Length: 169
Image 1 (tube, rainbow, N blue to C red):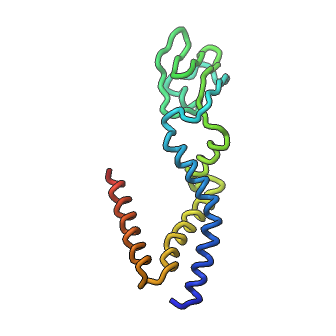
Image 2 (spheres, one colour):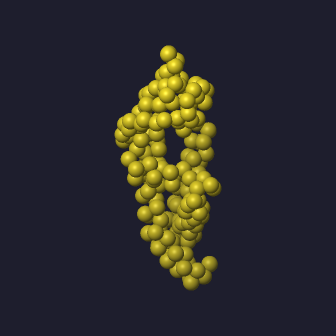
């Protein structure tokens, strides 16, 4: 490659790296928090009192409450008991507690887990394409004949091998 294209890759790589640093900080923090999503780490307990339809069955209560992995423990006198709360079939009142992350962390996690139906899905696509460019353009930072470039290739292969191994563990 010519000298001008090397310089262009360096300049784009540099400023894209600075720009992506902000996004990577958000993704890194939310990724760490998501690691503990099956625990109560950093979560606050919130009391919820909700009026639902009357006489919802045990099978449909989880869906009505918007809870996944829902299970009714017992039913006694028209009251359904589930982990963290109750539902009165006669009055339609559900009284329960939920554990939620603080708003900022919850919103960061939503961005981290977004899908094509999310209004900001283009951010995820841009981030992925930009990271791909960032990774590939790193190979234009050094001439292929230098020892730093050759060592960089070993580290790249090591990263690929480690990732493949971890996929099967």
